Image (cartoon, rainbow, N blue to C red):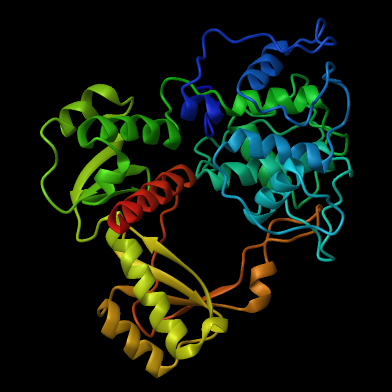
Amino acid sequence: MKHKTWAALMAAATILGASFTTLAAAPYTDLNTLPNRDAVDYLYDIHCLSFAAGDQFLPNQIMTRSDVAQLIYDTAASMPASSYSFTDVKPGKAADAMAAVSAQGILSGYADGSFKPDTIVSREEFAGVIYRYLQYCHMADVTETNVQPYADADLISAAYKPAVEALHAKHIMVPADNRFRPAEGITRADAAAVVYQMLHSDKKYVSHVQIESQVIKIINAEYGSTAAFFQQGTLYWDGDMLVLGLKGNPSKYLQKRITEETARPDAVSIRRVHFSRLDYTQLMTRAVNAIVDTDGVQNYIGAVPDYVHEQIVVTVRRPLSEAARTEVIKRVGDGIVRVETAETSGQLGRRQKADAAPEEAVRTANHGITAAGKVSYSPLLDQTASDAITSVQQDVIR
């Protein structure tokens, strides 16, 4: 049985180029007898412990919902910000973390608009958060199923059994005595140990973000910048394959660099595509304007590119009128835009009770323009693309 822990996003260390070999000890004064001190030192070094301010870590203190939100937000490093605010949370960095993780469905608020930041988190609730974070990172699949059940498995709530079992199969959050203790509060020390395990993988597994980071460095070397590359190509995940989509021929040494400078060259592919990232931005702008001009801004919710199927996915509150459909095809082209409808209440679908399983936003496909398909999403790539496209647009304006 091969032991696999997970490098979920390798946190800020991968993205910012921090060293993994010379970590400084955390300056907390109460860690001398802590068995998993390395976990705390590591997370402190990569700036993941903003919830533990001061000179004491308080390893036995139970994590609150606010603490957990900040831990996950810091670990993700590039999680998209959210403008949502909760009725019981004051503005600030902690509020930003709670809004962001809630928007991604990782740790959601309550139906009354509150977050209850000071409520303590049980071990099974924390397992649910970690599992949803792995889903957010596209790393929640379980390949190992022959796992010995916990001695107290019957005490685990039904809503959290899938999460607990998945983490068990991934060798994350596995107590040495084979008792999970689901109702007990998750301590700061245990939470740090779990995240530390999640952020480390064996050599047989490479996280998406590790591959992304390596390929982005290659792109910068070959094309000068991601902004320059995105004028002629795109970068997206198709399952577990990172695709460099190019409208023309690849640069001279691109394939050679991928072979020599990535941990998993077999997980990187160069493909010919019709649209660059800049093209997608322009197509989205045309599609959105066509919908707003005909059906009004109230019907428009959002738009994202689907790089796998080379389409623009537009989400609206109600099916498009015939006039809007005609205008979209006129301005963008036939077969390029896919429209999906979302009930207004579906936008609140990410909110849930803390003791309930996560809910998905309610969406139904509108087949009026094209058939529905998969949208490939990567937080790091989307942020990189956003920054690069902004740079390109500014260059055009100048």
